[in-house]
Image (cartoon, rainbow, N blue to C red; front, side):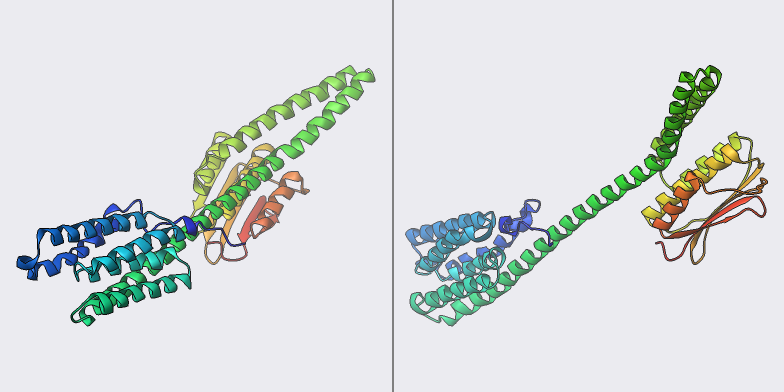
Length: 367
């Protein structure tokens, strides 16, 4: 569905550009040009009438600039009548007719904008043929040329405003989609972090209760201790997940993981290159790297860990250790890791021939 744009509420005046709105009026001063050649013949009554006509027209023009849509029609009619009647006083009104055209081009939709332009031409023709006594061509020709130019300006300004509004609407839609995607990512992170641990806590708590009722107090106490241990580990994981939301990106995450490994007395070899990838893929790699390092800290008997991030045709993340692994099964952590990688368009390869190596590679372009 196309976004609804408030085009009927737009005005030709741009609130942020005062001088652009009134700047074109500088050329309306050509209205007074005929006075120069007739100065000695013009009485003060005629001069006052010309001044009042000009002031009235400028006031109507400013009102039209700030009137949206077809609500400008009464103002345009008043401008046409004032300018036509003013032709009886001075031929300088040929300059003013053109200032009505941008309102016709901007405030009306096709074909009504061209209809209004036609009405403007009729008033120009009527004024030149019936109200000008000498050489009407020099009246209507400049008026028509100015009107066509300013009418085109109104059309282009309307189109540019609509394009700007559409861009703003699309930008807002993209931001909303990004926020939804981020909420879904956070939900997946919390699900992966909390799901398995909470299930284990529930089962062990239930088992402890059954053992207690059966009179096996020692075993019930052991299970309760394990529940407490799992709860503390879960609390630590939740804190890490929350703090992970504040990470500045993949490189900061890898540096943080390297520091955690070193604090646990692992020898870390890191090779990190600059890579180009989308936000979704970067988020997935952050989660995968954190999950793999967490597994190493909890389960590995290795002493050396290699962190490698490279990009040639594809982006590759490889994390390996030198621990001895005879066999392994896909637990909830690895299953969630592989699922997250597939959702981000990557494949996961796990090798246990020499230590434990996990390689994550995006199958296509990720930029």
